[in-house]
Length: 122
Image 1 (cartoon, rainbow, N blue to C red):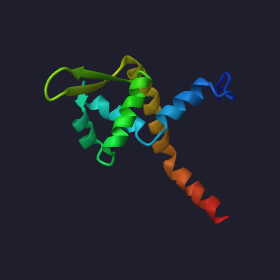
Image 2 (cartoon, rainbow, N blue to C red):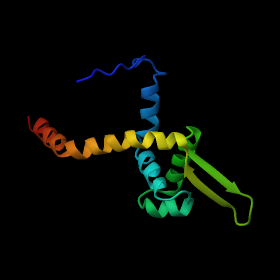
Image 3 (tube, rainbow, N blue to C red):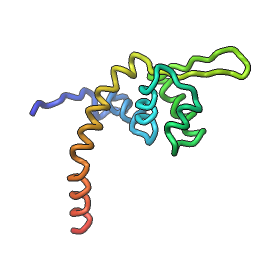
Image 4 (cartoon, rainbow, N blue to C red):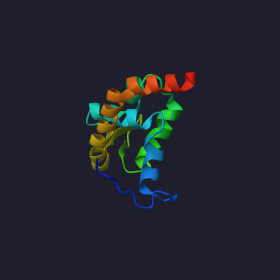
């Protein structure tokens, strides 16, 4: 097995820690993958596709992803206002890595759940 070198992993400004803290919340990864379903999506489309997310949480999630350059927000000057969201090139480069993590989780989740049960019963 190859050892992965994570420079400065013990420091607060570690890139890995910073990225994981942003995308490991409940909604970020789901929002990113939802945005892969179409070239652009409007807020209501996103909210309908992610049924459990509140309007406030979707707004916060989109803003955070936009701050990190993962989501582009396009505002059209019209009445009523029209806003569209899309993935950036940076987000597209991140998706294969997230997809690998999801695949790993799917392959290992049953064993992880069983190990947790064993640990709790000890």
